[in-house]
Image 1 (tube, rainbow, N blue to C red):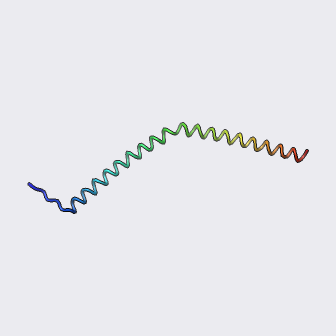
Image 2: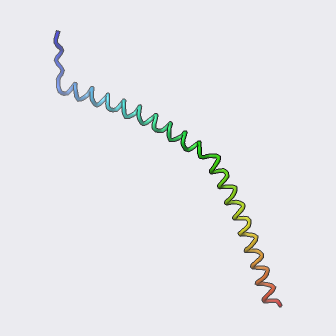
Image 3: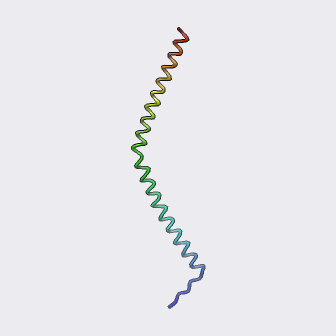
Length: 75
């Protein structure tokens, strides 16, 4: 028994197959990206702590500069 497929049916089946495979690939790509980003979380937290500590140091130094400049003007 021979099955005849019209070109339209072939195109529809191919489009459905392509859509399903792209969706499948996209889902797993998304999951792998999430895994990669979550593996960076400890380093990101560490970097944020270092930046916060440097910001605090810079703020303290700026305050000290302001005090020295004020003392220079007064003295």
